[in-house]
Image (cartoon, rainbow, N blue to C red; front, side, top):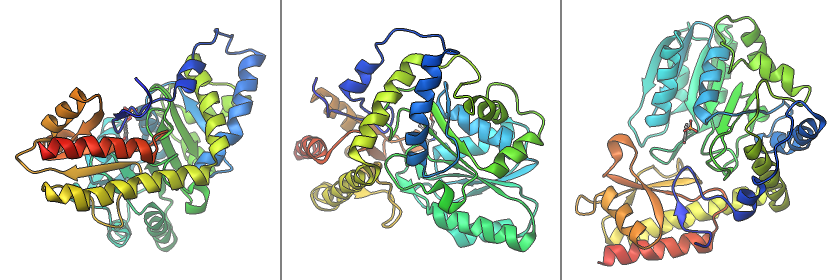
Length: 365
Ligand SMILES: *Cc1c(COP(=O)(O)O)cnc(C)c1O
């Protein structure tokens, strides 16, 4: 089937050229071919992360690098900002790794307010904060730059170091993530979301102070020890055997992203999101649809649409499937109350418009 039918909010559709790049012979991962591949992808990755720091690549799914954030970045106690399923996972990981946890939850579908985050932290006793930039379960984009500012202001007034650990899985590559400008300490994403690669790689960038914190902690484990990632990346290597075929795909995709330009890529995502919002508020509204996330806090990569009881999310996705299109039903407890369209990666407005036309026909019955 031609490209432009698979709008799941992860994994996203992979361009044929990127898929094809995987079909290359194996190589020794300690040899010169691999170090030159890593040398080649190093700078493009830093550009996408908007950082001068290295971006490590792990042969794992994104959750692996969420765990890395906790193991390497939480000393004793973290405040977990929860507003959906993935931020709840981040919170659970803090407890699973044996650290103390306080959850600050707002309703699923709402963003976190920086001023409230500041108030929670001012009481003291936290050395890290976890946050999900784009909550894929609800389509909410948290105001990350302002949350980072709030964390920094508490650090300054309390005189405590508080690291900000960010899951940017459905934002990075489709929304602005200004890692260095915002002073983020750990930023991670996975291959199968806005970067539109096959699943199986995680990417993460650590601030200098994150690495200093890591070096002072025990219990980092081995597979997700950032000190090892850093030591190896400096030699353009990976700690363990890398998923070579995915690195081939990554090399090709970074070429494609550079050719489009990061600004153009973000603008394309914004245009798709705005089209999706406009469609929901005009055509969709005729059938009782509405946007789940509030204005000003909607992700440019995934839109969650609240659907009426007469059309449960799982039935809509089934009807679309019969027409050759895939979107996501609601996530977890929102399964039937919402549908989610992943308009990220290599999708474009034309493809999205074709999908919306199908959706309209389904509602017209
Ligand atoms: C998909 C997703 C994850 C989990 O990624 P895996 O690659 O399945 O581990 C984490 N956070 C967010 C926001 C996601 O969308």
